[in-house]
Length: 341
Image (tube, rainbow, N blue to C red; front, side, top):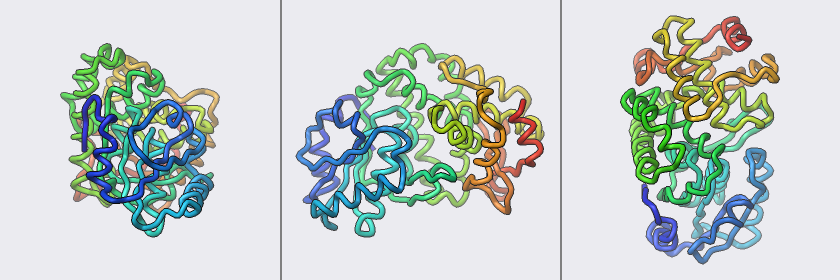
């Protein structure tokens, strides 16, 4: 894991170190390909920007292109872009010729804090997000915070929703730090952004190292994502991932409070921090509750047809344990009532 301003200029050097003597293919979306001049001699493969490209059709086109250009098992992939690119290119790497190594270069805050750490790769399907995928750890991850200076504010906020999630589940002090430094975060003060990256990556690495294959504690990283993914899907992806997760964090905290497992007032604290960062906290009235409930039924954490969620005990601590599990079954009647409110 590399974090530091100017690291992008060392991409060629780091590829030689982590993908030695391999023929390299760079995968990025069309916007990133136009915006970044990469210091690397490699073949470039692109796809249309947007969540809709995280599909089996895109995977098919990319793998067919690699085959058509004669890439073999002595090849490597470099993923350059946001979370969609990392998930898609990582899944290509995981499945191409039964798996080839890859190096990840996230260029959005969301990708740096979330998709690039942990080795999850995957695709969306009509039934929901990330329902097809594989665990495939990158050979290295290169994070250059200087690329965030030109990131649109909406994309910055996408990542901040994940930062709030990490703090809410595991670090009450970091939660307070985010609130105290919200202005500098939005202004992208370099030292503040690097501190944000290092703390959030450390939180996620700690969880992932203890449970790489999501068989137990790693489930806590899905806080806010059960409702978040369902809202995102029901909106036809007109809501960004970060916006949907922000809404999910508040809604799930409210559900936890109603179930009596979450400390009263937790949802208000989370909503206040999210709003200070410019993120939404309520489900848009234009979304149909039935569409959200339908998407919830396909969540990969569900067991025995029960919708299950990661719920907090309070800010900085998750309700659950290795003995009792990390998710809580939520009755559909309570779900519907909470979503409707």
